[in-house]
Image 1: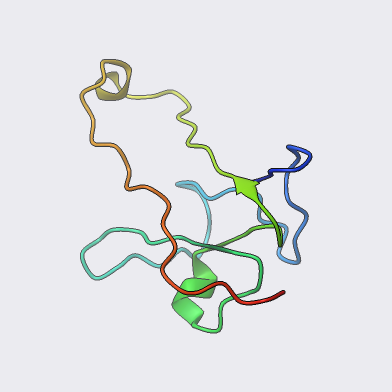
Image 2: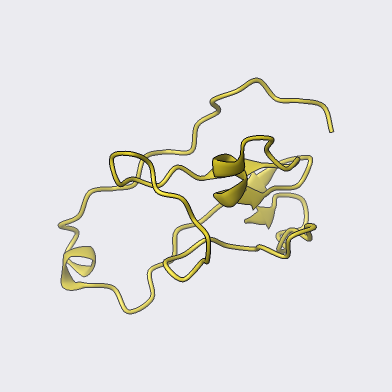
Length: 93
């Protein structure tokens, strides 16, 4: 999670700057997927809060990084993750 203005990591109250396979406490969806919550304020719902990646109050940039990728990724034989999409109306900070 990067601030769109200065390109820096987003300071936040839980010191979470990324989510990955080693992030403790993530909660999987019923189908085994993982829904991330990218927003400025902490979510009220405990499951959303467990999967919360704090964003700045303004614009932000997210990127997908793959360290030591499997051959499928290197060869382009993988399913892209779904796009980031707004699911709820934005609240004022």
